[in-house]
Image (cartoon, rainbow, N blue to C red; front, side):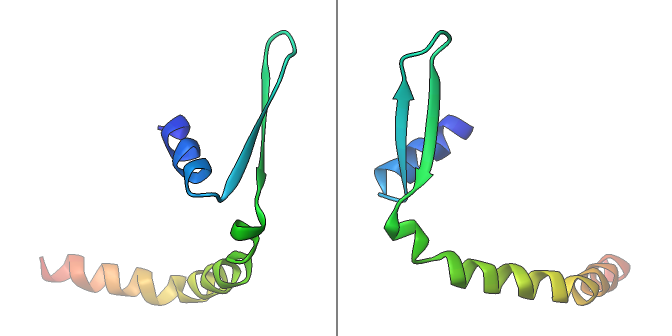
Length: 67
């Protein structure tokens, strides 16, 4: 599953993949400038998620109590 996700990220231009000819072979991944453009929005989303945890947990408890 990880390999599939990494390949899709590479296909979409979000990461680069560099294979180093070592024994055993090693692979290095790096973000592209395109991926760097989404860093701030993702950090904002992560900040929101951390602040929203108490409300999310309360919503889950309320839902579970109803079902």
